[in-house]
Amino acid sequence: MVEQANLGTPFLDEIGELPFTLQAKLLQLVQEKTYIPVGAIHPKKIDIRIIAATNKDLLQLVKKGRFREDLYYRLALGVVKIPPLRERRHRHTA
Image 1 (cartoon, helix red, strand yellow):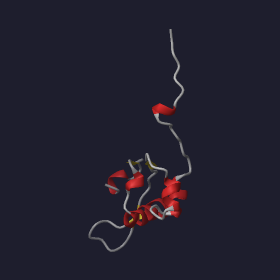
Image 2 (cartoon, one colour; image 1 turned 90 degrees about the vertical axis):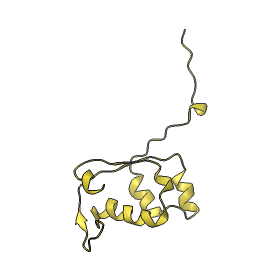
Image 3 (tube, helix red, strand yellow; image 1 turned 30 degrees about the horizontal axis):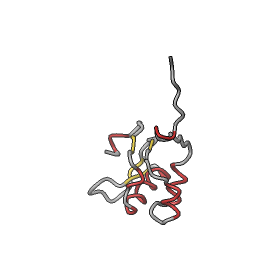
């Protein structure tokens, strides 16, 4: 799937659920723009931008040791926080 995303922008949903072992591979992809295809030995270069989403507080996961701090700071370049509906101010129209 990474190869298909070359020159594009993959969307990674629920990034907070990503197992710690896969976080290292994602960090390599984000930081070095390389990945190792299945069955290959040498890394391959790729040109992608990543958009990620989660409903978890990643900073809290970092503090608990369940999300890599270096990956968090690589992904948190442009954070858009959207509050849940229950926390939004409601406007009534007539």
